Image 1: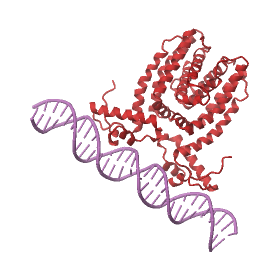
Image 2: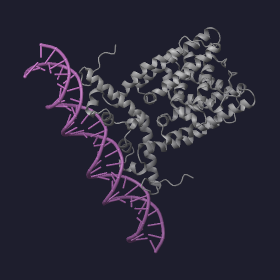
Image 3: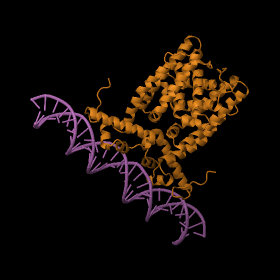
Image 4: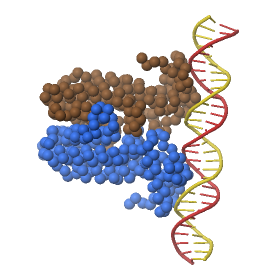
Length: 215
Length: 215
DNA sequence: ACTTGTCCTGTCATGCCGTCAGCTTACCGA
DNA sequence: TCGGTAAGCTGACGGCATGACAGGACAAGT
């Protein structure tokens, strides 16, 4: 499926090589969590991995290239987020439950991968197509499921027909992503972490169904 | 109020100096729009401004310091966003109008300053307090006004009392900011620019009042 | 032991960073 | 008019990251 892992100069990487490569990715990942993206240097990553800069360049064209690799792994994991909403009901108490689970899953996923996700966000905002596609890949699953939910409610006549399900779903997804990456920001508005979740769930429910949830 | 503009080594900047300084800021601003933040080099900014790197370091400690300066100017401008919601009505047709104007103003402001704002976003997400405060400064005005609006509706008994106005307002503001900086992203969900605005306004109205707008 | 292909590193040219001393320019009072 | 003083700018330099290469170390099969 993913083809063989190759070095920059075209060799196929063996067992040992792949281990080194992965170690570099792990160290880069740690680095991104602990220092600003702008200040992450190849030499630091290599040192942390107990190897030399030259080795790094054997597996990745540059820092950005390695970041894309990590993001790819995260994106694959993120596709699993669909599970939290796919096929779930949005009516009655079940709807409130669904909204809560979505918020929970999303925030948890974002918290776990915040360092790499904010770099992806930046790259996408800067117009880099590779990051942009990756961001889509991560958000698409949830977005698609949400849009389906809205469309279904429309079919049942429970939601205004002239709304665009994708626009609603996209706005919701974007809100969740932003809220997740700026969770700290809320605390300075006097909003505690635990308090934020139900409010987000409420807004998600409102957006999808147009109605307040039945708790 | 702002005190005198000073160089890094403590001299007060005169007319000519301030002009150079501003030119460097302008060039940096342009640079941020045209190339990735990570790749913006002091030498490029200096060259673009027709001066030498040493001059840059006379006015700013580093690229980040200059970025903070630009962001400060943008933040001052952003404080004016309050005007689009402050004291506006959220009931009946006027409410729908208010929501639309808020979305319009916000998106326009973000579009105009997207380059610097995404850097501020990154810095804040990375936990840098200076960027974080700046981001607050920009969002606080709108956030405060929105929170006031929610609190007022609560007092009138039109909105659930046990909701935290700041949490609602914060979520809305964060959604708008994210939607604004990823406007392109929506087009690949099949959502056109013009289509996005009313949907965002709808969500804003839903969040603040808990009800669908009367159009 | 020998061969083969993978894997890593020492080294080097290049270019940016950040600082300093020192030069030029503008302002001001005598 | 003429220094004196402070502002404004730059050339040059040591230091460090980048990115490329060739060659040495290592594991596996014969």
